Length: 320
Ligand code: NAP
Ligand code: F7E
Image (tube, rainbow, N blue to C red; front, top):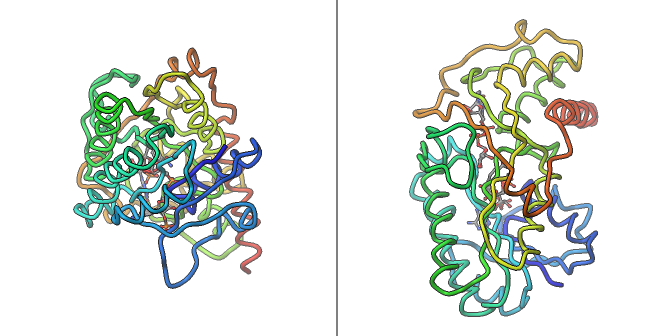
């Protein structure tokens, strides 16, 4: 089986590549050209995967890539994924995260219509939540240009499924984290800071809204759900979550306590990190995924935060 992953250099792409290689897949990854290589998360599998240059903005590059690979499964994980940047670059976010999905689906329709397509939808689509917990049937109310773009990507996936009979599934994934998470996202920002403060390299941590609540899971568990969605007989949409929400404050508390620090001695609120419109509380109901896919999360919030702090302690020590 051949799998094509866009966004392979990102957190999820790297975990998915690990997972598919273990399953015996030939793994192809799309990477955009840059003046320096950005392969930190896939260095350990570089000799086992094949990388092809392409960009979500360039339709022809997507067509040529699919002609070359002839994939059985396509995982569209590439996107501009950091919510605050989406207010600074709303048009580019729409191009990558929204219209980019149409470019992928069009290329697949022309080149390999029998392939199975996974779209990385997001709990950010629920935004100002209309019900608690959120299911596949909860109406969307996005609160950022990122969330709006993901709603577009989600519905164009549903539309191509219904219009052209493509096997196109959408995973509505709630926040998922790991030691490979980008440093600007709140979990990694906190675990990295806990390590730096513990090791004497940093004194304070400047944060935004500590009251926001998220349903945080482990990325390694979530990529398995992506794969399971493409092993079904019919395409469909699934919420992937843990069913438990924690506040940002609790996240900080668990991370700092793990290295013997009192968070209140170090954390400072800074307006710079307050968003123009906030998503206050996300909580997912993964019952459909459990019933249909047999999927359940395996790593708890506390285990994941400690795993990330431990990894950052090692990482920071190596830099000293
Ligand atoms: P990430 O670490 O930010 O990775 C994003 C990937 O997209 C990177 O490989 C990046 O390449 C690539 N990319 C961005 N723009 C591109 C373009 N124009 N052409 C080609 N590649 C491009 O994101 P992630 O956390 O792994 O998330 C994966 C996907 O799931 C994203 O679509 C995200 O929006 C979605 N999602 C994430 C979460 C979460 O909690 N992690 C939850 C729900 C949905 P470079 O390395 O070159 O920048
Ligand atoms: O923020 C609050 C912030 O940036 C989480 C992406 O993967 O998940 C992610 O989006 C919460 C927000 O993730 C800081 O206001 C407080 O309420 O880690 P985050 P996100 O915005 O939820 C979804 C599902 C995606 O799809 C996205 O691609 O934490 N917060 N203080 C802070 N957030 C950050 N980044 N930095 C702070 O200092």
